[in-house]
Image (cartoon, rainbow, N blue to C red; front, side):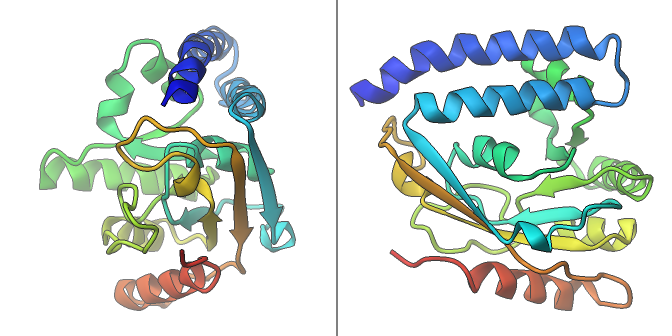
Length: 231
């Protein structure tokens, strides 16, 4: 617990600094590249400061051109940093709309081109889903956690249908990924931080054309589960 509290003394102001840089940089760059670069620097510094290494497998599976949707499991808070480090291409996060209301941090997310998803009611959720699909179809690669939240025990949680509705609407391939090791480093809802290694494994792209949402969900879930290490 002490290690985690000491780390937060560094992490919180450093996150604010990187967010400010992204906001300022975004004033001169509408592509989101400056914001994404700030996020990369944020991850490259924050991970080693926490004593965390990132190992990446299957990068040869990640398409080098065209938009894709990355989908994978969600084990802990450091998944965000690990994926920002692991994914070699420019991408955006699809995140709950509430995060975009956080002062400075939310503005940085918008400058980086991240996509808010309003889940407060069905009509707003559908509207934001359509907007996100249009962004993706026009060229933006995104990352989504179909579980919607972090797991408590490492097992896959039920997947939300919304992620697959979005994939079908956007019509772009899904690149599955599996995260291992993150939960042991920082368990959910606990102020703990243990040095360790997060392993990110990418799978072969899954085409969405002509595939029903339910079948697509099962294919993606199977691809993620195949590389999941059971405690």
